[in-house]
Length: 88
View 1: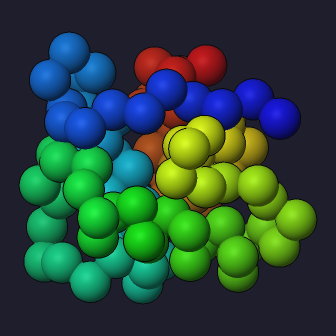
View 2: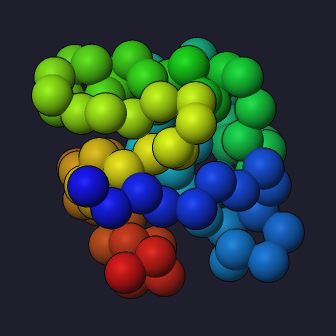
């Protein structure tokens, strides 16, 4: 599996964290009103939940961060392919 780097904020990432959060919000995994740009406990918990439901064999966890495959699924399903290109 390919793991994407773990970012704690959008700083220097061209909004990758916010785009991920927007996808998680849109899919109902993250219960906040709008993206914050901070990859904290709530975002991480939402990523784990998404991994369990969207890709049951996914090995996303605290140590490794989000898999590229899961990120792509989330972003693709939220029609945000421009941000996907930033991480490709």
